Amino acid sequence: MIALLVCLLSAAVAPASEPVPELARPAGLDAQLVINDVPTRVREWLLDLDLRDSAEFYRRYLGERHVELNSPRGPILAAPHAGRFVTVELSRADDRRTSARVSEAQLSGAARGSSPLPLPAEVTLLGRVSEGTGREAVQTVLARSDSSAQVVGAHLRQSFSRAGLKLLERQPLHHAGVEGEVLNFSDGRRRAEVVLSSDHGRTWIMAIIAGAGT
Image (cartoon, rainbow, N blue to C red; front, top):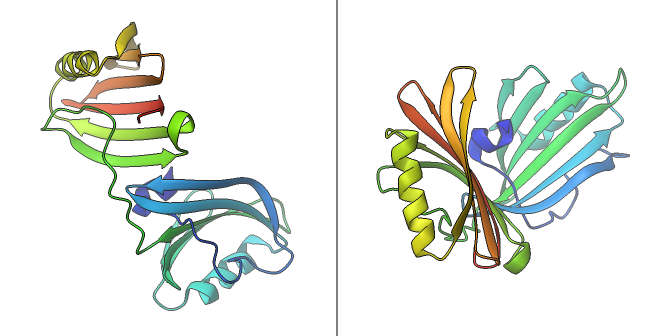
């Protein structure tokens, strides 16, 4: 989540050399994404270096222009590098090894996409992540509104209905002083799950839209 908010990062073209030290091993995630219209590759690695030496490797790799933040899990380093924007999140795997999530964003690769969520005009779109195509396509949308959850929900129900998606489920949301609702839509080909939560006079909109046509 931090990676999304630092720059809503990452890249889809493999570099000439892997952005990891020798003997690094793939460790799970290897995803091709589009984040805020930017082709992105996000990979996780297990490094045979402790946290301090791993951070020093990436300081050298990213050069003098890098920025560095400290998170509870470990350092986050980011900089433009060889036509990409590289962000590295480091955390301790054990006393001698480090986990690294490396995001590489293709700086010249904006995809010019549009949000699949029919948001009201006054809503601020905070981020959008796309993965896959056709029936495998999934988009995740995060947005914010100064209107109530009821107003935003009514707009979405009307807009999805016009687009041919039926409201399958509507559940109230009450948790730790936060009010809102959960909405589920589908037309057989596409499905959308939307969570609306109001807090301090604002409504937060989180949605996952999947299937053909997203």
